[in-house]
Image: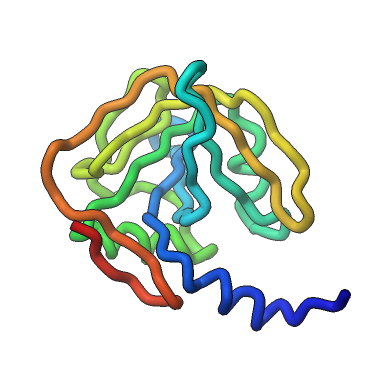
Length: 157
């Protein structure tokens, strides 16, 4: 079967998703990437996953480090998402960040933050699935989420 990838992508876009930023590295070397392929995997042990395109210019930046942080973006963090969605500048320098124990910064004001150590990587076609073991997490009790639906940002309250 031949799949029209543009039509397939459009069909996948009918599933609304939240937006997260994954960060790796420390200090001035910290980098980030906007991701909408985030999901829980297991409660015991606490595991989450996210997917990264193999042709991403940031592939090596995010498949090499053993530690990473995932920040679930709030509705007012669209500018953070936009900045880290493009491949030109993936540095988090100048963004409002919060320090974490694992070293990879979190986005200040995020609805939730998951500090992770890489548990596994799985080959998946033109992507790799990165599974993280959550070592620490925090959650904000208020605020709406930044979402993505049909190639447009939205808000979930």
